[in-house]
Length: 287
Ligand code: C2E
Ligand code: MG
Ligand code: MG
Ligand code: MG
Image (cartoon, rainbow, N blue to C red; front, top):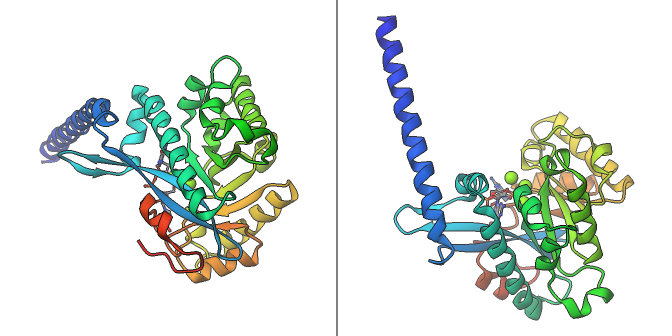
């Protein structure tokens, strides 16, 4: 009997594996046409400062597959990275985000910023000889860049990138700085690097992963951790964004710790550009 069920399990396992592989191959094939067929779009999630004012938006990609419908980034970004397609997709994301930033600034003013998620692969393949290629791509307004403190774009990278970084990563980050492109460290706390190590790199923001934020109010360790991350970051001159804020209690605790920016469903889900252009500061955003 044990043997029988073991064989069944093996059969089931290999069937599932085959299914997973087939859908992975299919997805990678379908990704090839996705840009041309305009199947991607960006949503923008508001980020509020300590006074509740929306000052930034994070651009988040969505793929509407002609047959399979909406495919979230967690289901295809990894495949796009494995196949190298992330470079082209990432290029599109940056161009689209820059177009959006221009129209958002016309409505909401020049201080608004947009952050884009950049994959490590994109960085290594797009940075060019001296790390400038991606920086050039990210340039929003070449003519006035020297007089601006920031050009409006923030690049979100993960801890993982810094942990496996080489000289060219450091150069790319330097090039960003020279062009007024700010850098945020995404999903902080999920990797294994120490804050001290990370601070060897010149980063502007640290984003506390929602895993920690969502346990606020329920688990004292998360409270201690968030508080410590925020005060250490501040001591090192880095601003802090909390991700995945879903309740008022979480928001209040974070603000009490001195957190600089909050992002999460409590304020707003990611919304389309049209909605970004029509929202009014101070009004509750709903998606
Ligand atoms: P991320 O950069 O950490 O983005 C935050 C994710 O958390 C987003 O998921 C957002 O919708 C979700 N989120 C925000 N607030 C809340 C909340 O209060 N509760 C919960 N449960 N979730 C919240 P999304 O849009 O599905 O993106 C997932 C990940 O995919 C992103 O994580 C990012 O790593 C990646 N990604 C998204 N867009 C791009 C892109 O254009 N390029 C690259 N390379 N990666 C992207
Ligand atoms: Mg992000
Ligand atoms: Mg994140
Ligand atoms: Mg993430």
